[in-house]
Length: 350
Image (cartoon, helix red, strand yellow):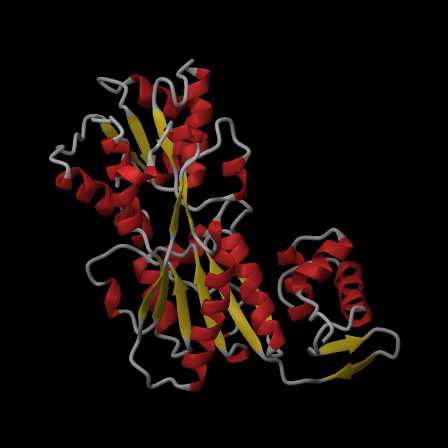
């Protein structure tokens, strides 16, 4: 069987972004007509699945019933984010069933005003997947549209299960707890959590796992060495440098809410001449591609993102076919990966 062509394949062949190609194929957004025509012609040349378009050569319109899945996100996941591989496998799976992925990136103003993005037409989509969307009110707005919807991770609130939608999560609490317990059993006593624990449900569950491990080993949570400020601050290197310098003591280990935070922290620690793992241990979560090549290689938790994308598609199609089924929050198993950033860990001690 020949490989199904995806939006990413077209984007790669033209040297354009996936977002640009998606907008061109779906007639949304502002772009030069020349660019749109190039994308459409390349799609036809690569035998991309059918969509409604104007035949440029004959100037006649071919009308085909679109089968579309809308992705709605606060930001397009980059390659260090688990969502990037999830979306790639998700798009491949829906493509096999003749569906196109329409990408909708929200602006801050959209979220504040609870306004649907200009590129999004609820009447032109059969289902919705949300990635990196952690605003409670906006999530509830999307659920009110009455479309089958799946959230890959979601916001943290006591009422998050009230959403009339399915949620697909990675396992967070147990894997983080096990990681922390193993580090403690190898000698660490002062541990710091790094990340905005209220940023999303997965971050909160990792924080919960961190606290659970400390409780099991009789070590109190020390808020004086935790770095749990709001999410936007960490990417300012000057702020992070001052924040580390303000700690009353250097912890034995930093347990970061994800790999991006861990890599940012490692960069900052090096500028402060703090050695890893000699002076402090650092752990992340996600197993992003960079974790194996950063110096030192990062201890992390692997999320099978490609399989998660496949499951996301399966669950969304199940909801589309059976809208009356009870809503689910599902967890996919994760796996610890110990590397040099956490020193020598004896796996047999746990």
